[in-house]
Length: 496
Ligand code: ADP
Ligand code: MG
Ligand code: ZN
Image (cartoon, rainbow, N blue to C red; front, side):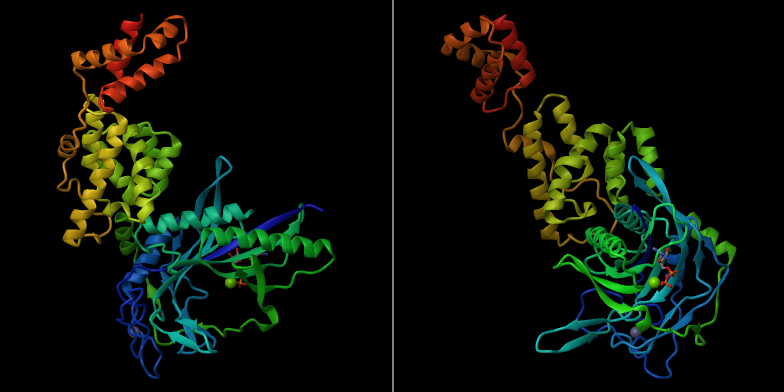
């Protein structure tokens, strides 16, 4: 029998607010355990939560970016359960009245695009973190307790693990574009629960689903779903039944494992949070938030294609991050040819940045450097290979200057146009300027032809590929500095 897969994701995103959802504690990642806590977020009796308006704004901003209906009236609810990382004994979340409903995102899907519907987006607080140490000891770090967490729930519109991964990627890109979540999956600021079921092709009703918790990498989402789909199909084919349960992806063993079945599932006993007033959102506030949203990726990508004549592939890559797109546009506005700028960015620049995991806004080589470099190639001062070595040198020096200034952590999206190193200085220093003086090149060529009469004869007898040999010799004789165009012209003239 043929089976079809049905997938729905619940994406959790920590919001980029400076402080927690209901208290003034910092949300910074990586501080010493339990150093960012107070009586409110560790749930002391009698304390009262105070709502973080910025967090509400970020959820609305997200809702607008993905075409949701923004609720003019929504409410928080208590979700009751016990766990050591949740000292209050309940999580403040949203239940029947979330902040946003509906909406969709578009994902790339085998050469075309596919719309994935959204059910809702709601706001809640994150729980703490249990750390299981050796010697049968476990520890609890409550720094994360109370960090604003946004949950984006998709409709069961996803049909393949690949689509699930694309959905997750798209959500990450959007959240980073609108600056509400840093999308750092390793640190857990973005993670998802993946729900999956299979059904015989042609059947209308969904099959029984299983849910895989807390996936924090694109690869795991795809792999875990792949595994789970095969497991479910095999189970059904063998005459078995799928039990509704929560499963965990074991990355080491490459399998999913049962965590708890439906019978063990919590009854959360949701009820309206009595300590918080309902949230009323005025239309004027929504308009104001809307006006502040910058151009999103899909629109920017289309514009890059039409305005700069870039191929789709380039436009996709250059708009994957707002900061990358901004770097590109800076270089173009300084006079860089769009396709040339794109080639260098996608090649040498990304390679250097990826090697050291440096975000482009901290790139030691600035847009103006690249533009200067392109000009020197264009007017024949240096060739492409020389340009590559200058490029690397500028990058290295820029890094030294940055380190000296302690400027490695520039605020996001502030891209400096120029830093102190000048392209032309490096070119001079390296003695790289190309030799375009014909008489100098001609002298070298004459010398080569004289020393290699055998090759000259064979070339004249029709061995055309020897041209490469002569060019190579000329470049060697000039230490790679001869302008290759002139070398070729002169050789062709002399060899007839
Ligand atoms: P729960 O109450 O168990 O969390 P929900 O109905 O809220 O379930 O759905 C959670 C997620 O699971 C949503 O993303 C939804 O699209 C998806 N989902 C619901 N039913 C199925 C199913 N049968 N197969 C796959 N995904 C499903
Ligand atoms: Mg669920
Ligand atoms: Zn606190």
